[in-house]
Image (cartoon, rainbow over all chains, first blue to last red):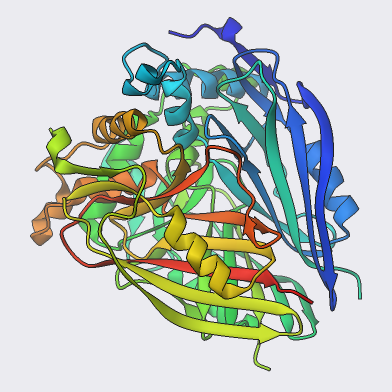
Length: 170
Length: 170
Length: 170
């Protein structure tokens, strides 16, 4: 059973964020498609990391005024979700995920030499990827909505893909 | 443990729907991006509410013929999902959600004075947001697919964001 | 309780795939919207089927270079998800889904004559639908990401909708 000490809970900042990497940019007849990778190395094996600010910076660079922003993990041992940034809630979420998809040694996947079978299951409980609506150049969010990166196999370099598609100023 | 009486199960109509609010409209070179908020006040704390008709009306107003329709809760104590509208199934879903993410007093989140820790977890089991394909001006659905609003902290005003993006008649 | 023999686990090919059906095509001012249905008949009641190659063929036919690819089940007893194609992991996933949303006779939904109540719940644990980013005409995936069709009520004809939207060569 995981302990609280195994989790990096970062309700208000992008702990483990390394850099952003611009990948592609297309602009055709008022349409914009803009792609960046966010690079992370979370300092514990498990983490719930608020990345709202980092994704917002990508949105601003894209110039998209109205459209959709895709945010997805590029690994199958991680996830992306939208929830509240309250610190106690992050503890609740981490314990709940562990209860429903526990760390352990009894996974068939471990015959390959891996020990992260639980991480593959945990990723179903958050989301692997989300889409966030963009209106007037900003995330069209309610008061408490924040974007989180869920790391279930950390202490190594991982990437999150952000693609903003939609209409620019015209 | 919740009882059936705590749930508003509405397999065939949008119980608690108050109004729709137009938020934004952009049309550029054949592209349309159209945004409305659906306002709800579900008459019980928990609810599974069929909102297919309400979202369909937004789609028709948008004029989008081919594209994607984003539907997402603007609160982190609610969700959106696609499933069958059969009444017995709604009971099954409500009990299943309660079993995996139970109401209770032992959540850290409650130290803030809230008592809705379960609602934040329940939202992972449905989806927080979905995307529905639009073809020839209609939802491109199989026979039994319906769009539901899942309320886990009702008796108050909540919003659902609908954004339709795609190509219009041209 | 389901046994392993009830599951068709296909980590490397699209077992049960019948054909693809082109549904719609729109091209306006550099924008493309392209829709196909993939038809399946999975040879067991439950299945986890790698459909990456089949969806990739749709992407190539669409001509979209930069955008989003929606992939969704057209039934509410099936799902779509992204995960690793390792054979042991597929066993782990199948057992985990069964543990959290077990087959059984005690679902209210069965009063209609159906016996697939578990399938409706299982579909919440994978995803009903996903969106995959497309960059330079290919899925913008990490090393281990593969697209799977999750069948929870097989031995009958089912469909998966693939819609690719975005910018073409220009």
